[in-house]
Length: 120
Image (cartoon, rainbow, N blue to C red; front, side):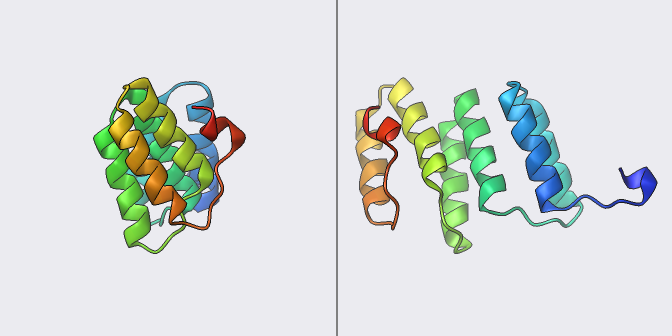
């Protein structure tokens, strides 16, 4: 892409990351995120959401929650899809305390959980 003088932007990187998540290639997601930041392209809430999802899929809950905190510190909204990923990952770890804390924090936001989230 850059060879044709087309510069990738946030949408480009996020789209590629989404594709890699769908194929289970989380390492490429992490690499693209690093490349994106290195090139001075700012991630948006969707990009961060994909990173949270990738960390959850890898079992890196600490990193996932740190990214969620970073999203909030930047004043960006945390999407319900991001919370779904966090709740699902916490549920898989059978850590009901964190699950409850995550839901309580969610309740303080202007988000409604998906029916799938409530059933977790």
